[in-house]
Image (cartoon, rainbow, N blue to C red):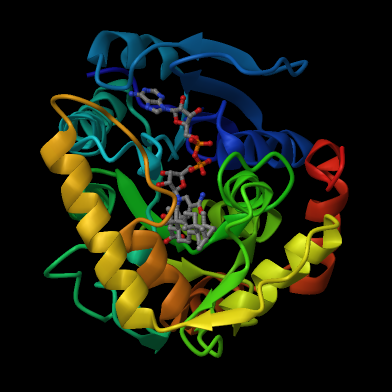
Length: 345
Ligand SMILES: NC(=O)c1ccc[n+]([C@@H]2O[C@H](COP(=O)([O-])OP(=O)(O)OC[C@H]3O[C@@H](n4cnc5c(N)ncnc54)[C@H](O)[C@@H]3O)[C@@H](O)[C@H]2O)c1
Ligand SMILES: CC(C)CCC[C@@H](C)[C@H]1CC[C@H]2C3=C(CC[C@]12C)[C@@]1(C)CC[C@H](O)[C@@H](C(=O)O)[C@@H]1CC3
């Protein structure tokens, strides 16, 4: 067991700090006077004052050397949801998270903040203003979600006030913003292939999309409020923009902002979901001979055609959370950050 790090020390590590959310978190932590190191599979940028450790979070020794002297750890690493690789999700999100917890305890880390996901309670059917006491999904919609559930349970159960190891989880939903490798690029790719003409369902379903800086703000508040005897110990927190929006209005605003047409024609939800399910089964059957990745997976169709928005009352009460960037400004800043994805670019 390493010597415990001085309480109140501002030395922190971001596991997954080379990724979309991780890098925004690193930048904000540095602005706020933290001394930051990054642990990731690769180094994707350079930032003065930030130390990079490259390695796999499943490798305890590599983690241990990166966590020496660190008092606060943010764990926001995960394989991409689109990889749909069960073995990889189980290795990284479940066994890897056990390794992260063990290494934190061994290195004398005092606080661990996990980036979980609001999807841990989503089963493909409507969620309206869902609170954190909703049960975990019994039938998770994909392997990503199934392993995010296990990961969150592991981190929250590891909270041990008596031994001074405190944990909490942030559950963001639909993160977007500059440098997002997922939402806007997939949307634009789909539009460029002429497939963004259709609205799945009646187009009235409300959803949370959360600007990345609000997610970062929630993480830092949770870390700073996490103290022995605080209500934050061992708890999950929804962090959203607190402005549910129609899924298809959000998509249209981003598309139109980038010079593409908004989807207009309606398709019945059950028909599209059924087709996506058939296609997914076909990819499973054909996997040994050929591999292809359909755009319209059952998960994406469910996310596009149902209500899924969450209450962040608990974060407001316990952490004093309030979004720092509105949805309108977030969309504008996001659109401006993707000149190369503009129509005709
Ligand atoms: N993007 C969203 O909409 C969203 C929403 C809710 C929750 N989340 C969660 O937020 C976190 C960050 O997501 P993101 O969108 O920034 O993803 P991202 O893919 O941009 O970043 C993930 C990072 O984790 C790293 N990583 C993956 N496997 C690793 C391993 N074995 N060892 C070390 N590093 C590893 C990757 O290299 C990458 O840099 C994830 O935990 C994700 O589940 C994302
Ligand atoms: C082809 C179109 C119908 C849709 C194109 C946009 C989609 C690629 C995104 C819309 C909602 C997004 C989303 C995620 C991935 C990208 C979308 C499907 C997540 C599943 C990513 C993982 C997170 O943990 C989930 C969360 O709980 O926030 C995301 C939910 C929204």
